[in-house]
Length: 117
Length: 112
Image (cartoon, rainbow over all chains, first blue to last red; front, side, top):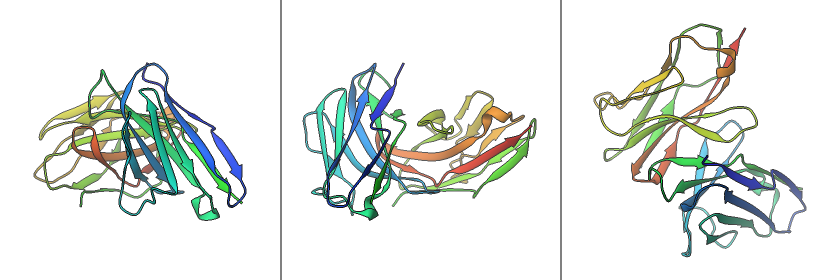
């Protein structure tokens, strides 16, 4: 149980295009989903917190107009990287907290590797 | 702000060796502390957690004790296996399900 999926697992795109990454909780409803960015050999950096039906809360320094987050349902959140540039290349990871579980326990997706040419 | 510091890796051990990965934290309040593990090609998984001082989290032979006096949460295992090879992240959350802060991760390689 408590499985989180991400799609796609990897994507390559041209500079200037937009890319959408989906995060789904497969067997539970998620009150809150988080989006992280992980640079090579570095830790996870929290980008934003999203709650179903409300606007995402972005961390300081994260451009909300560039990283659009939509949490449309209790099982789906999407991250859209708009007008992507090579510096946006990274590993993006989502996590979710179960509606029925411990509020401090996150379940992580496997990540999406984005490469912008 | 809150922060988590971990010992730098990579750590390379022989099978059945004793493992310690140090983790110290800085927080203004009373955070919950976690160890997550990331196996190759997989997402992070919760390994263990402790929610208050002197609590010991344990799972799969791994243990960590919440030490408020030293602001530490060191991960230990008495006898590692090749299958324990992974990246281990120490993390804290100061509010229920919010404000997670992760350490940089420590890569562990266990050789047969």
